[in-house]
Length: 474
Image (cartoon, rainbow, N blue to C red; front, side, top):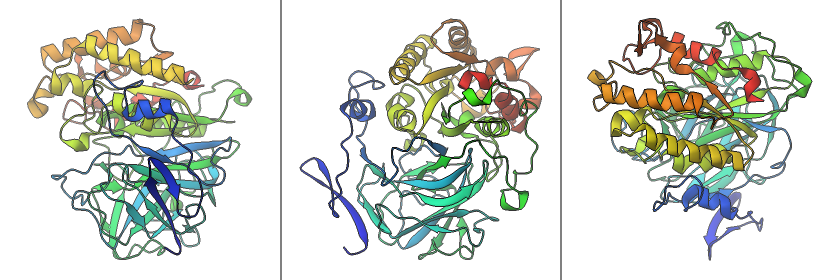
C-alpha cells in the first residue's frame, strides 16, 4: 500500500495504516448524526458517519468554510449524473465559488453515502479559468496526512492537508478528484448550481479542460475551507472569475454595518431546500440568495463572515424524502451539515415548503421541529435566524400535492406568523413579505417569480439576499 493513506475499521475504531490515530467522534455528535440525540425524531435513527479529521492545522483559529455542497445518496433515475452506476478510472472536476478569501485551502472529500471504500488516486485544487480549465500555475497537489493517495471508508469523509493558495473572496476554484478503482454508487449533490465535469483517466493534475464533459451533479467534493485573511477580499479580476463575477453587487452591498474591528470571523450556514440551493438560477454562475449574501459580506470592510450553502433541492424538515436524492431530513442532517461545519457561528433556516407541499405537513409539526433545531443550535452556541416561507400559490399545477393549495397556504401563513412572533429565533428575515405580490400575498410578485410560482428567479433571489440584516449575523 505504498504511497496510499488508508483508513480501516477495526473492532469499532478507526485505525490508520500509517499509525496516525483518528480522534473518536464525541458521543453527542454521534447521537445527533445518526442516533437518538438532538435533531433525530423519537424512534428514528439516521446513518452513522465516521468523522476522519484533518491533518496539521485542523484546530487553527481562523479556518472557515468557504463553500459546501450538502451530500445525498446516489439516485438511479438522476438524468446526466453517473453517481448511481459509479465511476472507474475517471476524474471529477467540481467548480466551487468560495465566499471568503484566504491564504490556505483544504478540501473535504466524502464517501458519506458510498457502499465500498473509496480510493482517491490523486486530488488537486486550482483557480478556475473558463469551463473546466484551471489557471496555469495555480494548481496545487492535495495530500492526506502527507500522502497523495487515500482510502476513505464507506460512511466517512476525509479532509486534505492545507496548501498555500492565495484566494480572494468570490473566487471560483476547480477541485479535481481521480478515482482509479470502481467506486460503486457514490455520494453526490444533485442538480447543483456549481459546474461539474467528468473525464476518463487521471486528469486531476492537468489544468486543461481537454476531455472533460459536463456532469449534472457534483460528486465527492463536500466542502472547501480556507484559512481566512484579516478581511474578506473583494472580487478578483473578472478574467479569473466565473461568468457571473462581473455582476454588480446588490444595492445593500456597501451598507455600513458597524465597527469592523468588533466582528469575529466565522461561517454562516444557510440550511434549506431548492430555494436555498438556487434552483432556477443559471448553472455555473454565482446566483442564489446565499450567493447574494456572500457578495454583500465580501463587500464590507474589516473582518467578515463566509457563507456555506446547505440547501438540497426537494429537502424536507421532518422526513427523509423519497426519491433519495432529496437527502436526509433537516433534522437528520443537522449535525453533519451545520454543527460540524468549520467556523459555524450562525445558521439561517429556510425550510418547510416541501413538507407542506409534498406531505401535507401542518404548521404545528413544523413549529415543533423548528423549536428542536433552534434548541440544538443554541446548545452549541450557534445563533439562528429564522426565515419565513415564500409564497407559492399557483405552483400546484406543476408540483401537485398541497403546493399552493388553500390548505398549503394556510399552513405556510401559520408557520410564518409563528416565525415572526414566537420569539424562538435570535433574528428573523421576512422573505415572505420581501417577494410577495402586494395585490395577492399568497403569490410571488411576477418580477420575482421564475415562472413556476414556487422558485424565485434571479431578481427574487437578489431581493432575498439583500433583505438580510448583516448586523444580525454577528
